[in-house]
Length: 304
Image 1: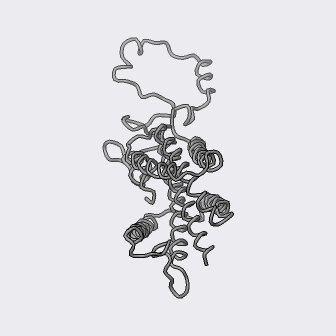
Image 2: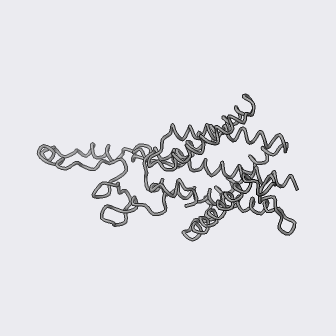
C-alpha cells in the first residue's frame, strides 16, 4: 500500500484476516468476526444456552406480530456501529478543515513565526508516527496532528508566498483539482488499483525517499550550495527539481487513488465506525505531501 498507515493497518490492508473465518475459509455476506455463522445486519448472535428452558416454552408469534417484524426497516451500517463512506468523508473534512484553519490563524492572525513553524514540523512528525503505528485510531491524537500540521503549513506557506507572490493559491488549487480528478477517476473505474501497480508505486516511493534523504544530507553538510540541493542541477537544460517534482506529484496522486481503494475495502468489511478517523488521517497525510510537492515544484518553475 502506498500510504504507510493504510498498509500497516490490517483493517485497510489489501489482504486481511477480516476476509477469513477463524477456520481459514472466505467470509460470506453478513459474517461477523468472532461468530460461527453469518448474521443479518443488526442481528445479535445468540449466546450459548440462550434457547434453553423458558425460551422453548414461549408462545409462537401471531400473524400480526410477524407482519410488524417484517415491516421494520433493516438495520444499516450506522445502526450497527460500522464505518460508512459518508462518515469517512465527514471526518476527513473535519481533519482537513482543522489543518487549513490552523494554518490560516498562524499566518494571518498570529503572523508567521519560525518557532511555531518548527514546533509544528516536529510535533506533526511525532504525532504522525504515533498515529501510524497505533493499532486503533485516537481522535484526539489525530486532531493534534492536524493542528501541528496546520502550524507548519501556515509558516512554510508564508515563507514561500513572501518570495513568490500567489504561489500558495496556485498550490492549493492544484492540490484541490488533483484530489477531485483522482476521486473522479477512481469512482468511474477508469483507474484501477492492482497488486502490480501498488508494488511499482512502492518501489518508486522508496527511490524518491532515498533521493530526498541524500539531498537533505548533502544540503546540511554543505556539499551542495544550491538552495534546492541536487534539485538545482540540470539535465539537458531542464532542472532536475522539475523532473523529480513532476514524478513526486504523480506518485502522490496515485497514492490518493490507492487510499480511496483502502477506505472502500474498510467499508465493505464493515469495520467499526471509529476507523473513519483512521481514514481521515490517511487521506490528510497524502494531501499534505501533495500540497508540499506542488509548492516546491511551482517555486522551482518560478526560478526558471
